[in-house]
Length: 142
Image (cartoon, rainbow, N blue to C red; front, side, top):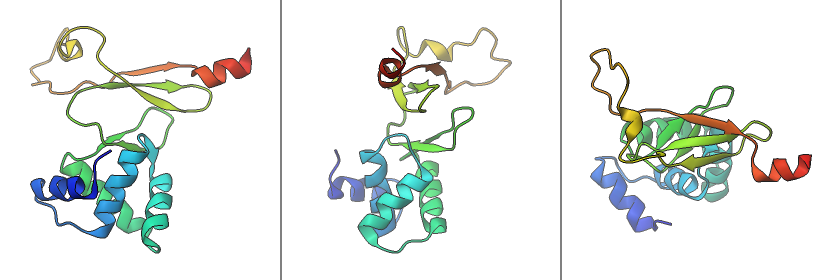
């Protein structure tokens, strides 16, 4: 888990001012990968007291735009945020409870970036979502 000093350095390297809301949001997302906005707001409010929904939305947008966070939105789910950026990993989602876990590319170096037909695009990212039943839900069914 990165320290407060690490978060300050991340923000400065991204040419963003170091503010309490930005620090709190970065920390919340690092501690709770794949959290939705409401969950992040709850964690930030626990740390800072009063902070508006809009302030957290603005921080999430700024941090995502700077490449410090990644926004994912599996079909049928609200937007979620994670701090694992820049490695083109994928996700597996439980159809029952909605829990999300990271999945590395299956074979070799980012094989999913080699499309059968790129239609002239310079492809730099692929989004693959695996769906299934998580171990906890599978146990509950058995």
